[in-house]
Image 1: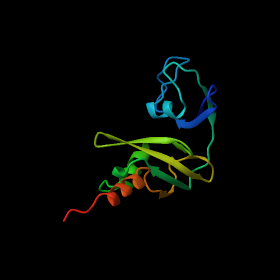
Image 2 (image 1 turned 90 degrees about the vertical axis):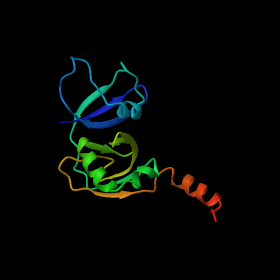
Image 3 (image 1 turned 30 degrees about the horizontal axis):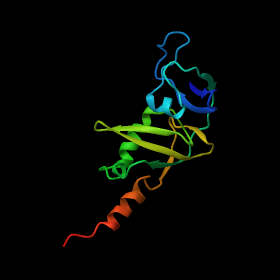
Image 4 (image 1 turned 90 degrees about the horizontal axis):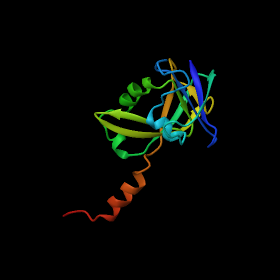
Length: 147
């Protein structure tokens, strides 16, 4: 089951699957990163709709930090962590946890639509340079080499 969750006050939406149906009637528990994407605070009202999404074929991701791409095998880590997601939406920022550290990753592009189902989907993944890459590169150029 896939759902569209929207914050009507901010005209923001995202898509998700269900981990479990254990909340009291009228309540919905969301992960912190999803609340941030939707500009929600605890106790905010949302609209929840059951939806069908096309299986994803292609996604472009952009880590916030170069530290993520410097991990031993970021592609394998990402493949494993994406099993925690049912859908991805262009414009969302997801959170990948690895060795006790959080890595934020932007969803830059999705195909065949801006929101895709990633369950049992064979998806081609492309990466953009991390958001901090230019800043780090500029610092390296400005720092004189030690002799």
